[in-house]
Image 1 (cartoon, one colour):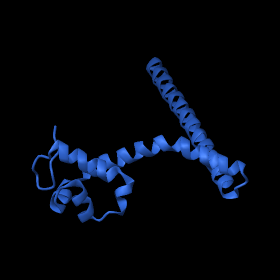
Image 2: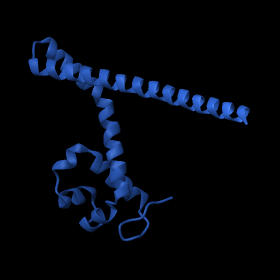
Image 3: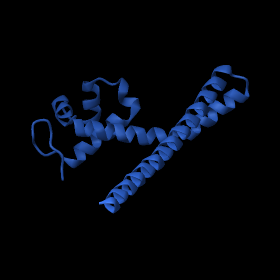
Image 4: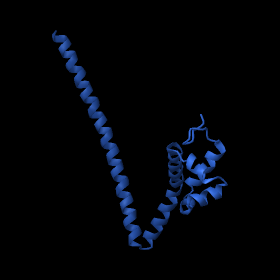
Amino acid sequence: MRHQTKRGTKMSVKTEMKITAALADMENDILSREELAAKLNITVNTLWNYTTPELLANVRKLRSEMMQDQIPLIDKAILAKALEGDLTAAKLLYSRIEKENSVAEQEKLKKDLKTLEDIDHELQKIKEDIDALQT
């Protein structure tokens, strides 16, 4: 299903894709609306009309995906700088490691919590069975 503009008309798929790609490209962040519209060969009103919450959500998702592809390269560069003796890079590297360890611990706690919830559910069933046997 095609998205609707702010004015309620159906979006052109080509224009929607062109605007989404342009807004996702961080190099365009420095451009004004007028400059971006001119670069895309559309009017400023069209740009405004197409920048709906749904389109902006797609832009954020696309940017996130683009950044995920770059993280391994960034990590390698930080490691190289840390190995050269750059203390700022070393601190950043250690903070990333601590964060990853913290996330792993939180995931383990969530798994353990689910196990406790399962145990609690089983105990509740046993109590119900006991109550049924006593009546």
